[in-house]
Image 1 (cartoon, helix red, strand yellow):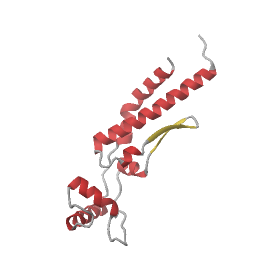
Image 2 (image 1 turned 180 degrees about the vertical axis):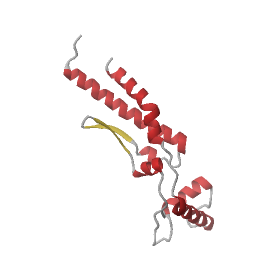
Image 3 (image 1 turned 90 degrees about the vertical axis):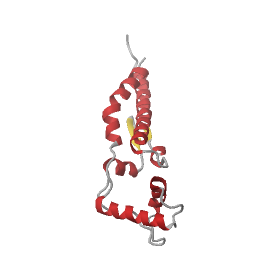
Image 4 (image 1 turned 30 degrees about the vertical axis):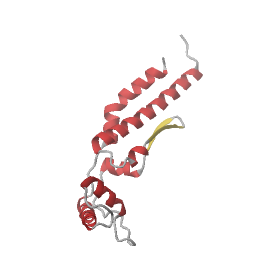
Length: 149
């Protein structure tokens, strides 16, 4: 049995596309199971693709911050509004504090959270490393078998 080089390259490209998509979906699934869904902004922006023959996974920097955590820092502050705009909705959704961004209960909870992050940073949720360690071999094996049938 002989395999034409063109057929081999096409099958290999197809396998890489399957691997990229399946890793993308495995990352989204693990992230949701491990960390919850919240608004799903990170999940909606994880993409697997093949670029110049390489499998590439793209996601916003928040994926890195979630994966490795962050050192102590003050969250981004809006000096005009005198507020931490990204934290208001999170506090309302996760802690149920306040009904709006201007609510005193919400402002107090946001400040407590910001102060905690400034002292301790944020903890890591290693969803990328766990996915690669636990799922990559199964995903790659299945994709190669399917592509070279």
